[in-house]
Amino acid sequence: MTNYFREQILTLPQLIADVAEPFAAEAARIFDANVSRSIVRLYTLGCGDSYFAALGSELAFEMLGGVPTEAQNAMTFSRYASDYLPAVGSHVIGVSVSGGVTRTIEGVTRAGKRGAHTYAITSAETTPIAKAVQHVLTTRAPDVPNDAGVQVPGARSYFASLMMLYVSAIRIGEMRGTLSSADAQRWRTTLAATADAATRTIDLADAAARALAQDTRTHTGDFVFCGAGPNFGTALFCAAKMLEATGDAAIGQDIEEWAHLQYFARFEATPTFLISAGERDASRAEEIRTAMHAIGRRIVELPQAPCSEVFAPLISAIPAMLFAAHRAELLGEPYFRGFAGGRSIEHGGGISRIRTSTMEA
Image (cartoon, rainbow, N blue to C red; front, side):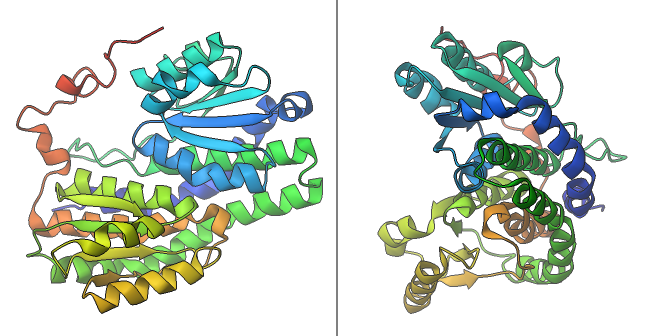
């Protein structure tokens, strides 16, 4: 049986290489000097993978863009935070690949009514969210079709969103003077070079991920994914891919919060993925590793190629995705549980009404 999820993952290095330059041009079209310098505070929002991409880019906007940034899930932003945006200088980026997620559209719409500058990162200028904002950054990165017509857990769309967020952060920094033109170009080159790091990571991690999937084949408990900083979004994304690919109970957790919560879990041998960028998180990750070992956790650290911490989500997600793909294949699990038991993809999530939810003004 063809492993369609793994096939998507194998296309990610080429995707990074293909979109780096055109996405940078797209960001340059939107973020000129006047727009970039007017940003007092930036908010990024989305649901699911789009929210995880927003979290994964927060450091880039602050470190490279020189902009105080807050990533929020769309529900929190729309129904709570949007009522209290600063009157001047608020800029809001809604991330939605499909462009049809009600809560994200609601968030940018409410922000716009309160005077914020609004943007959408979405697949086309004709999507519903594109029509609800002032500026649109398009990320055309469709999944690679398969001969069986199988819907595959999102990987390419997540990477495309991350790439657009990263090039936007670099462009804003360049226009604000946080980065010199030479520095901005170096960062763009570094970002494009993650394509090679992604290839090396696949080469390093694929066999190890399959071996781990085989070794944990009979495990029926939780899988925990821990990350910090930009890799907290990675941890949440990896847990999401496990849920979508295999249906296993999976938890994404902040490295620090693991010590306050999962540390006390009853089942000692829970497979726990420790996802570290090896930079600002390194000392705490080492302490947590010691704690995990002491209480008998099965610590998982699949190999990956080195990468700048600011772009780490592009690399750190790959090993866990490969694990989820191999586990789904070995277990014979249909992706998304085959949309069975009342689950449905019709109307944006069936009964969950992802795209037909009531929108509040």
